[in-house]
Image 1 (tube, helix red, strand yellow):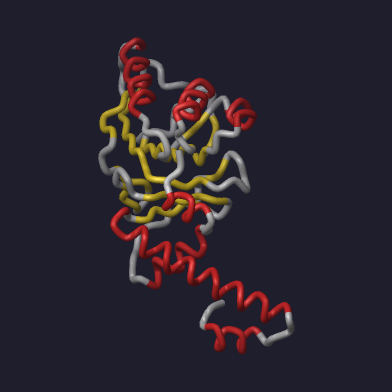
Image 2 (tube, helix red, strand yellow):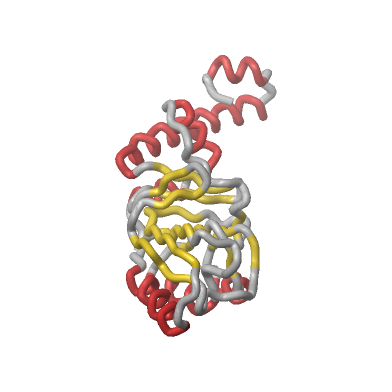
Length: 215
């Protein structure tokens, strides 16, 4: 399940989206560089399905009910974006990734840890996260908000805001300006292609910049 905006966004890259939004005067849309891809070279794009969690001492059954409820609520065609508020346990693993992929979730961005990553690589489920751990959520973590605004680093992410992630990092595009950002980014990509062609043909880089207004 892929919408037209997601398809267009996936043809862009984070650098051009960043430059476009910077030129529009926007701030705080680049997620922390500690978030790295499980599958380098595989882009992840789509509207955000947001999750926030809390740590504590909970009944094991309660935590697993809460977790499976999250999986049930996940939206096809979306990117699972999670602020777990912990770096002690994994917020994604094999069965969860398999479930999300089967539902049509495009991948996940987690401001925390993951596990079972060999299985996730084999199934081709893209995930961005900080580091690895074998520890799971049982008895220590519960969701506290679903499809509500969350904050990762300096970036607020609302349900339905668009996410683009590639080898360079992760950016958030507000839903209400996604079409404008895409149009300007697509125009910039076209200009960059002209600059590239000119430079490969021997044009001086400064001359190419002055001619096309892009570098």
